[in-house]
Image (tube, rainbow, N blue to C red; front, side, top):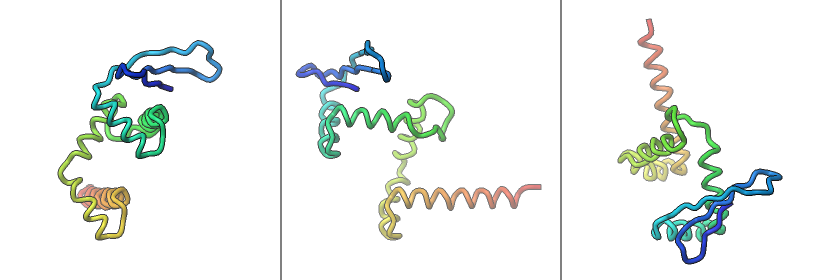
Length: 126
């Protein structure tokens, strides 16, 4: 769990395991623009900043690593490169025309690509 210290612009994290009586804490200094982004996103999602950060951390560590073998930070950087590619800008329009959500369209396109690669691999196998 974390708490935002009032008027300091710093997040203070208290880490507790179930049944632990002495939490470990640390401070994370964030630029003011990051704190504002967190506050805005938390408000839009209908949660507190604490709940929002906890959900982000949970999501960060919940999926299995699939793009690279490395740390979660390296995995997150790989996702950032993937989703920052210009081709990704075409996904919402394609999805709209196919009456899919962007994530459904992306999964569909990945499925098509995997099938094509498997067929290509099978046809070139000795």
